[in-house]
Length: 226
Image 1 (tube, rainbow, N blue to C red):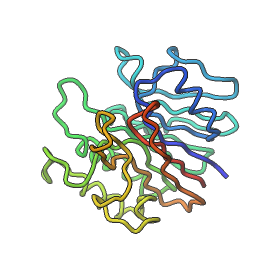
Image 2 (cartoon, rainbow, N blue to C red):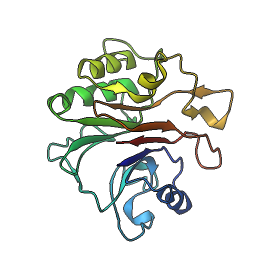
Image 3 (cartoon, rainbow, N blue to C red):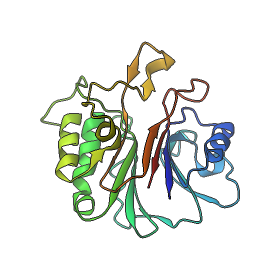
Image 4 (cartoon, rainbow, N blue to C red):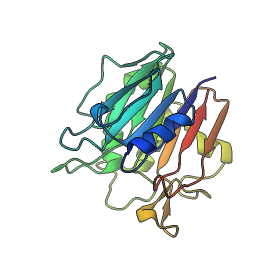
């Protein structure tokens, strides 16, 4: 079995990296992760990182046990910021996902995500795929329009390519009507949102949203087991 942890760790520290690795996942998708030279990895682990070099402590990191082969896809397009396509064990595509606004940028979070999905469509259509991370998106999001891109359009795109949300498939709940939250805005229990997802067309053994630990993050971890 392969375990993939998806967890926005909020203001990365070495202690948080140590804690995440201790969970024992094979691959860890970590929004708000610090750059290579800001943290230490134990022997037997490797890492990819994308982000703004002027903000070394806050990018999108992917850490994995080197028993697995994880490589950046040769067709990676850096225009799709903070969405990193990886080829895992020459078996499937993993899109580590954290749509993030850049200084001066005008695109909304759903627009950033939808543009990337369309840009990578030929690969998503033809390969076993997992897309997971902090999407910064939810149904009914304000400030977005169909002319630029909504999360509802992202969901439709994914469904059209046979990619389904593990949480919603397992619970039968509708988008926007989730009984669980994955994010607590400003660490407030009365401001819950569901913005962390795992979409896949790969048969899974297990999926779980972990408990919220406010000492670690404003997000909840997700574990996907193939």
